[in-house]
Length: 372
Image 1 (cartoon, helix red, strand yellow):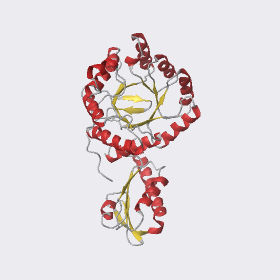
Image 2 (cartoon, one colour):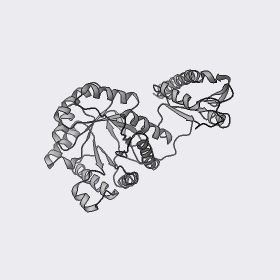
Image 3 (cartoon, rainbow, N blue to C red):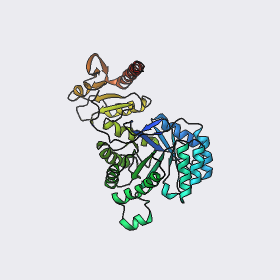
Image 4 (tube, rainbow, N blue to C red):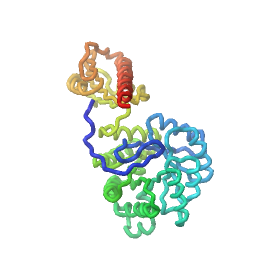
């Protein structure tokens, strides 16, 4: 029910990771990475499916060895979401996963040795229509760049990135995206801003090694939020020392807060005070758990009193404003005659939200048919 985002996106070229469009105005893709051992095919497949279930558009898998490449072949056969293979140094692994159907290679051309090795990977990527992600990290810059700049700086990160970009340019390969991640928010933000002014390719955003679930989510929201508000970014990953599923949830929450992309329910809930007429915190926590399967974009306001409740409910798909024993219920901004018993509020709200989600899904399905 809220207005669309006022953000004007940076113009970039278009690539495809599997069937997911990246850049040139495509929806910003949310990405995560498995943390299972890739050679444990069963565990890795299970985690990828779990990530896909919560909305991950793309999943990255580390492929450090040939054994992992053979496991990747089996993994790829069992999942639907596009997979990026994370490869360092060994060009033969890149060629092997390309043969096995990888959707994107995360490999820095300058790190895989002689020119003919780089050319063989790039030629293979071109032949099989596989894009490449150049990934620069403030913690692993080349030795000569470290000596030149003494410490990671935006200029240092971008110089490193441009070395790899120049190699691909020389080989006439333009299907790539670039990241310049750092664990420091200002370093990352300034590096991305500098890079965005120098190339036209899509940019993959991330504050690397951001920290644990809470601190990492805050740091990522601040850094990625600054860049997204500038219109910079075509894919993103929230890097947390936590379950990868949380990375995807936080990624969507960041996009949702900026009205860039909505997936699932956006709960508008008060922080609670002595005016609350029902347990707002318990209600919202329960609803979030119960309704994780809802992917329909919806605004639901859960406000514990009548001071702010009606105003928030009037701009939500569905809302409740707390009152003594029974709370007011709003649908599409209109107060309904029906009221909710505060003792059964969670069950009643869940039923109404599911019914509204089904109605919105049906409406969207009809609209898409009409457009077709």
